[in-house]
Length: 84
Image (cartoon, rainbow, N blue to C red; front, side):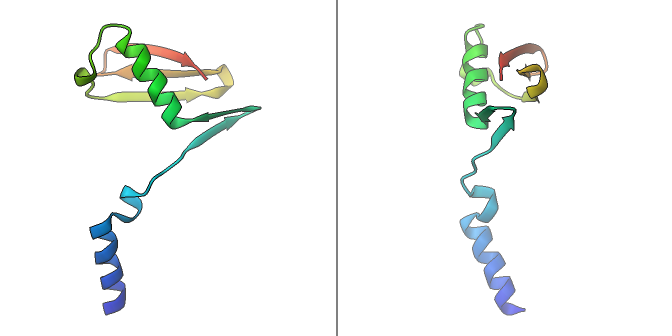
């Protein structure tokens, strides 16, 4: 029991899963998209509309690969989409 607690404490201190580097790939048909690339494209699209980087509070993302689109809502009122 003491060993398990020590491991749990060590994971909490170093982060474990919460701070582990993650790479998420969405696949559909013959296409692969990395979530980091999707987020970067969304950010660029929203910034091109006049929102500044510090204005981002909340970003909801809906991946619809069957439509070849990624839809997003920023701060509850800025809607848009990018190609999947």
